[in-house]
Length: 151
Image 1 (cartoon, rainbow, N blue to C red):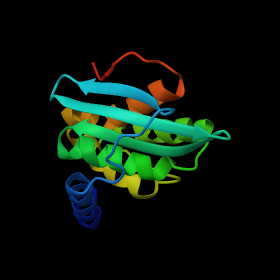
Image 2 (image 1 turned 45 degrees about the vertical axis):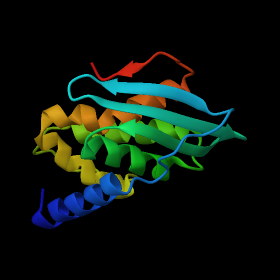
Image 3 (image 1 turned 180 degrees about the vertical axis):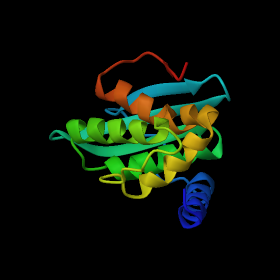
């Protein structure tokens, strides 16, 4: 990873960790999924509201490390207005990004600012932190009410 991308990674991640976007509960009508990363204790409650086939609103509450919080914050921003199929496709691209080999080329197409999470693959134990919200999203999209675990 270039020094410039590493600096951007740190700045954006810290901003979203300190001031997470869409950090709030939603009322009735939202699909709610709980996610847990037993390795480091991250917990998330993800709220997803749909309207006319689109993800109208996404928000989250919970507690976790900077990577987990930033990932959830950025995910909720990136997915508003997307269809479930578009959200699934982005979740798959994100997962490939963070689980690729450290020296693999970064395929940034369609990821936007989420591409900064490429740095997580240098720390494999942190991949579960970065993907917790995304696993919770997939569960919400498929109507699975069980608690999502990264284990």
